Image 1 (cartoon, rainbow, N blue to C red):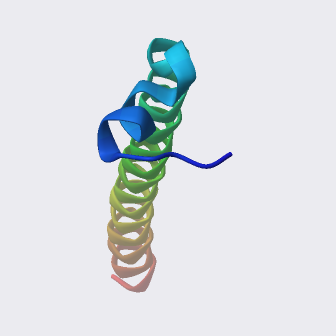
Image 2 (cartoon, one colour):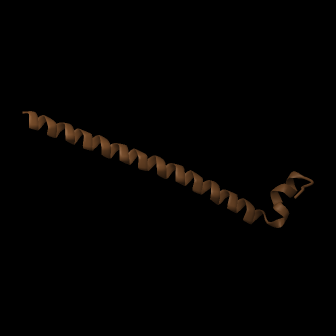
Length: 64
C-alpha cells in the first residue's frame, strides 16, 4: 500500500480505528507480559530467600 501523505497513512484507508486499536492492544499486552514476568520473578526470589533463611536457621538448630 502506498500513501501520498502522512494523513493518509494515519487514516489507514479508513480502517485506522481497527489498525491502530490492534497495534495499541498488542503493545499493551506486551507491556503486561513483561510486568507479569518481572513480578513473578520478584515473588520467586523472595520465596527462595525465605526458604534459604529457614534452612540456615534449621541447620543452626541441628548443630546446637
